[in-house]
Image (cartoon, rainbow, N blue to C red; front, top):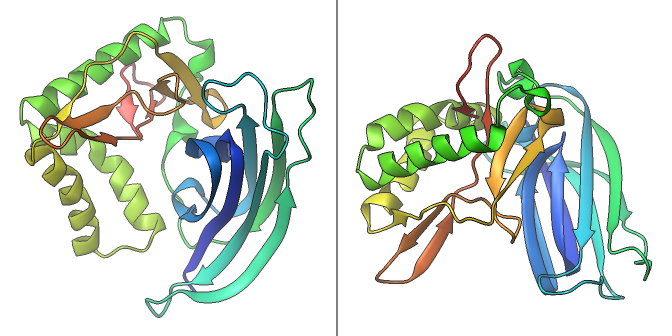
Length: 256
């Protein structure tokens, strides 16, 4: 069996975030409602207990939660052995409580047991960034600017070298073939080659820690990644989610 886990969720009238094992899966501000399914294998490092946390805050530009705000979620398990999505089981479904007018927050935490035939070498071997003796934000900005320079200078091979470990883990967790994994990476590079340029890091950024303090990323006020590509002709924007860690025994950030 090739277990393939997805989270099926809905969010209504809020800025919401979903984390798996304290690592962000998605964050978005919704003026209305949305429903979607997202694969989560890449955030399951190995078999055992997995933690899901959902948070809801007021929509962009609002100070209070809408009275109808809520988040619903559940995990569905499929088997990918045949190459198709064969439904196996549905885990418990959860809903956040009705918003309290005095508290601009809704949330829920749950766990589920996962069985997977792999173990990802990821952030579990990273240092505790929250206890770092250096300025994490300053060091992250330097790293982001290095990546922006690689992208805008057309130095895609060096960018791939830095991004590859993240994609290797994704390929392992998603049971991708070598050609499928290469196609994913090429898709990212194709956008860069087709007129998309990395934008400068804005001033109003903050460091977001995750993975229990072992991962860090720069986020804008809209809760999304500070690494963005823009096509001047089409005025389209791509947000590139990216997280960093420092492996034990090293002193430089690496993408994971």
